[in-house]
Image (cartoon, rainbow, N blue to C red):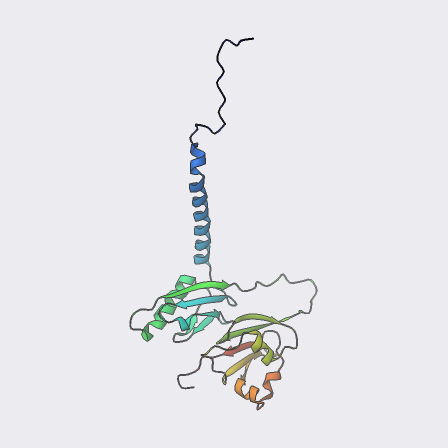
Length: 227
C-alpha cells in the first residue's frame, strides 16, 4: 500500500530546538536563591545580641598576634591585649567591633582594621527537670590567655592542672604567675584564689591538685611588658 504523502525521518526530541526560557534561567535562579540564603544568614548574625558564654573570634589585620578566640565572661566583657576589657554582652558584633577599634587605636599609627565574628554560641540552659538531677559534668569558665577559652564541661573531680591541659595551654601573652580561681561561697560572695602555674610545675605549690567545682571561673590575665 502506498501512502498518499511522503514520510520524513523523525528528528530527536532535542534536535533543532533552542533551550526554553526556563532552562536558560535555572543557573540564574539557583544563584539568586544562594545569595538570598547567604544574605539572610549574614543579617541574622549582624542582628544577634551577644551573651555571656559566647566565644568571639577577633582578627586585627595590622597585627596577626592579636588574632584570638575570646570568651564573653559572666560579667559580659571580653579582654583583648592592647585594648583591655570591652563590654560585649547585649551588643551586636558591629558595636563590639567599633569599641575594639576605638580602644586599639592609640597603639597604632593609623586606625586599625579589626573584625569580630561569632565562633561559638554559649550553650543554652536545658529545661529544668521536675526532679533535681545531679549533673554528669561540672561547667567551668576559662577566660583570658589560654588556647581554647570558653565554657568547658569537665568530669567531677577535675583538678586545676588538668583543666589547664583541657584549655589548650597558655598563649605567649599569659601571666602564668597571676592566674586567678574565682569561686562563689555558700553566701554567694565571690572568693578569689591566686594560682602560680610556675610554682605548681616546680612543686612549690600544691594548688595544681585543687579540685574544681561547678561554676568556677579561671582567669589567666595578660602579662605586663617586662613580666
